Image (tube, rainbow, N blue to C red; front, top):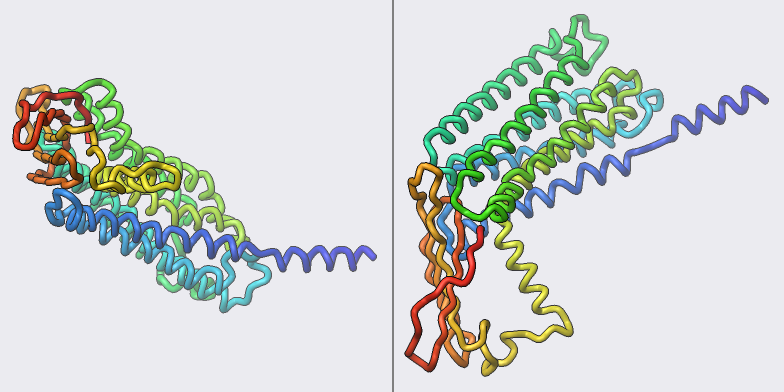
Length: 376
């Protein structure tokens, strides 16, 4: 009786599976990464005030490709070869193939998070036109590149010969995997905190209202939330030393796939957030039961019989030196919904100033007067 109960317990243990969880977790980041970066490219090439692609755009495209490769390699070498099942239920061939895939996965992971960091730094360099800050950005970029080179060298030398990484029958020796993973995660977490905190001192020196500074700081430092993923990944590193690594390593593998997604989101957000807000606003206006401002061509235009002009005012740092600016004017003619948009684009932070102009009759206008300031 005791033996039968023990056999049944062992059988139930061996059939346990988290394979579906792994497949879903590795699949979700791919379309999200492609969608966010695709929207960014559309904004830069086709959106209002499009200016073409910059170095940070090319870097985020590369980071997106590598980030998707992390998930694809996980899907190819993970669930089909036992990731999400107990090691005792797997054959030696399955374990060997999984470990080979894990080695490939690690290379893609290092490249993805480094590329994402470089894309964020390139964005900082483009929009914050202060010499000291740009020197800090370049110094940090050099550190990230050296970090990536170091990780790749250590990963390449982790086992001698390298085939021992996935085949334990090969004679040789390997570095301590837990210590290596701790080193990778701690340096990665500290670098994330530093990079996403960098713009805050510069933003708080800008000549704008405190509320606008807070909003802009939130926009650029939202990447600190991704540090939670890095911290969570650090907390499950101990799974690397587990004898049942194909089961206990599932949380670490999932967090490794989602960490590049968080970085890509934060790198794209400052570029796409205005387009996203505009699309959500348009969807809200088109919602059933809500009156449409454009359904009747003879209806009153936005702001009544007024014209709306918007100018991106130059940003001044505490030194008093002006940054470049973006000018945009939109005109709505009385009695119609015809809108004229004349953008002049600049690759800098933008602070928008709204103007209101009353139209007494066709062809006669009053001078512009500012009605509020905002940041974008």
